[in-house]
Image 1 (cartoon, rainbow, N blue to C red):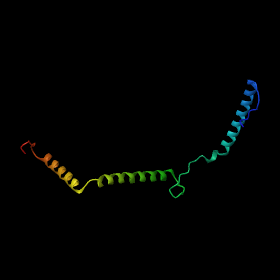
Image 2: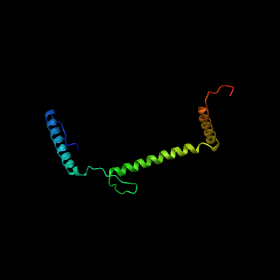
Image 3: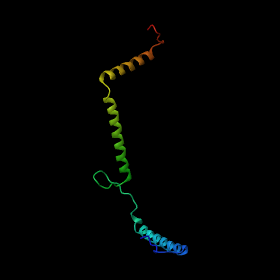
Image 4: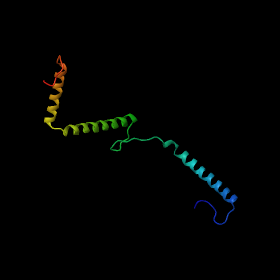
Length: 110
């Protein structure tokens, strides 16, 4: 199975057998590597299985998916808030702007 001879062997016989097995494995690995050397380019495909012509097309699709996720997260955040809360927040912002434009500071009595 592993290329070694069965039975009792001396260490030198085992070492020689191991070296020859290693050379055979390296030779076959080099042959396989030479056969597949031209097919090392990555092929990108879309959802339908069509090949993408360029890496930029692939990156464009990735960025559009990220934008969709971001918009969905923002929309879900907005959905969790009611109309009254939005109105109160806008009024508070308007009041802060009015206060900042007044010529003097407010006190507790105001």
